[in-house]
Amino acid sequence: MHCSKDILGGVPVFRGTRVPIQNMIDYLEAGDSIDTFLEDFPTVKKEQAILALVK
Image (cartoon, rainbow, N blue to C red; front, side, top):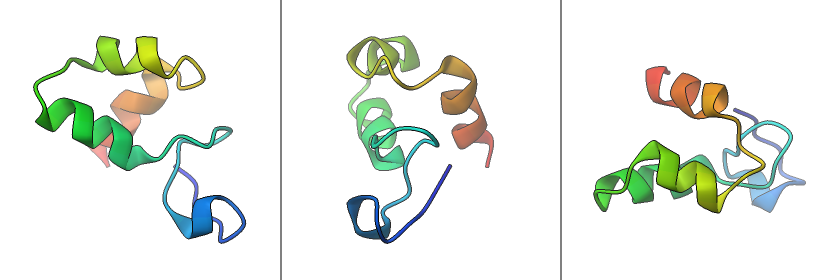
């Protein structure tokens, strides 16, 4: 996870991407799987997604 005011105004994103962590949370809350999220956001690695859920 990474936060910088220079990237999306400081919204927490997956490191090395401009994909907000909230996007994954929204997918999961809608009943989608992590795999579906990863297919739609290929710059995010599965390990990053799992780590974000653990933290």
